[in-house]
Image 1 (cartoon, rainbow, N blue to C red):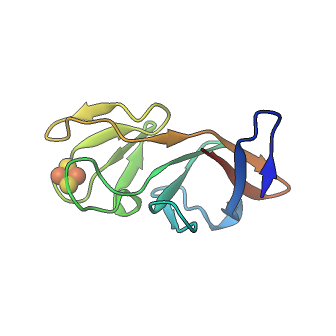
Image 2 (image 1 turned 90 degrees about the horizontal axis):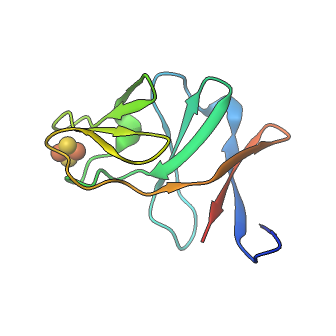
Length: 110
Ligand code: FES
């Protein structure tokens, strides 16, 4: 774990090569709810894995145009902001700052 100047914790989540293009990769980090790592072109984004509408894993949803579609009821979220883009989801999901370092995806968890 690395700390930046503000004391925030950067955690290594997974190798970038393990993140599929069409869906997410679920990652478990001690002390945190399950996370989802998504690939958007050359960038990586990290969100919570559990849908805000129910107990669905967003990693199992389809990703297109920067959005993930929940596999349960087809609610959609913008992966970059966490904003809801399709009903029945109504609450946004948490997103975390992410970086690629030496082939590993890191997230700033605080
Ligand atoms: S559980 Fe995700 S939209 Fe219902």
